[in-house]
Picture 1 (cartoon, helix red, strand yellow):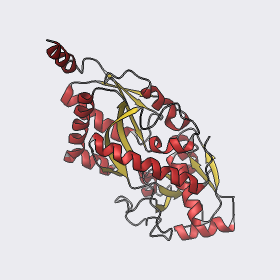
Picture 2: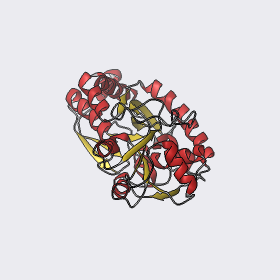
Picture 3: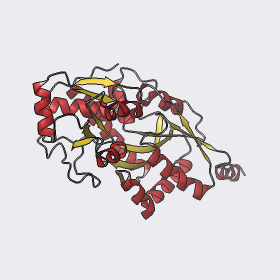
Length: 310
């Protein structure tokens, strides 16, 4: 009787909407994979999803909210590589990035961020940009979504490997930072292709180089930083799904399976690719192993760029 009761309780999920915490502002690139995953889950489970944007502190505020949430399958985290990076950026996080979460599935990886500049800047290649920065040390500004954000880390690593000094101007979010680059108030930004490619194709920005190991299909003439002379430069991001640690394993696996199926659909893969994302769709175990390696990699990058934990 007890076994049957337990089984019935497990089968009852889902019976109410799921809160999807996104620890960044609305309109950021993370919404593309988030909507891919939740759309499929809505179709196959009958679930409804409510996006909860909990912004601030490089994603840590929203992430903490999920770590402290009930472990009942009704609070989900969808975030990016900040989850791997924040343990190195903060002296003390209000959560454990590994032990306080149950990894569900990695939705995608990225091609890395694109170095884009305002067209008024007289540089048409990575080499010319580096030469210009060396001629004007500390004068050229680059925008980011905040200290420790992927655009900041990508640009800081670029500067270290290029041997140049750039002035970092952090903003509270990608959209605000990006607008000032388009307006010409800031000379450069190393940002997600999802955001910048349309503006590059429209001639409002100039793309010089890419931070990942392979070229982005939507800007095939833009070389990787490695190809442009920064040997070994390889810094990409990802998006994924987590539950609070202790969430029933059957729920974690059911959601992971549906996310993987969603990512495998031809129309989903095309949608992700159209937005500059590389589909993955992994098991919880695969995602957990990836995270362990990426957290260590991010810690090495932080040491390399000399960023002091806050």
